Image 1: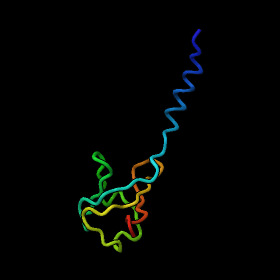
Image 2: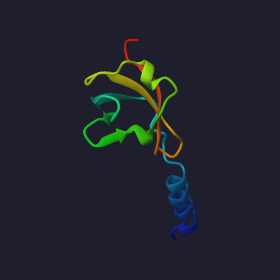
Image 3: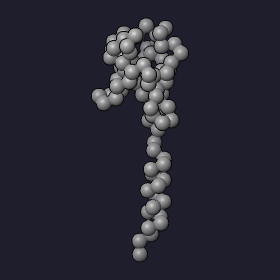
Image 4: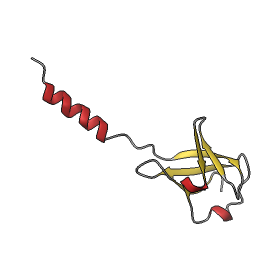
Length: 85
């Protein structure tokens, strides 16, 4: 006999406990004032999706790399620092 209740509980747990992305490296595609940052080949972030106090003091150039921390929902990213700074 199948344990349907155990399988259902497993499926619900998997759905609700997605693994966090963790710290990622983003690459500046376009400089300020219309900043664009890519994460890999599929994710492109604009200024509305990036949160940082010192974004304007980092002197970002195209090709620079940023250390990013995603929010818990993965919809916004906190800019921690510029790689190599």
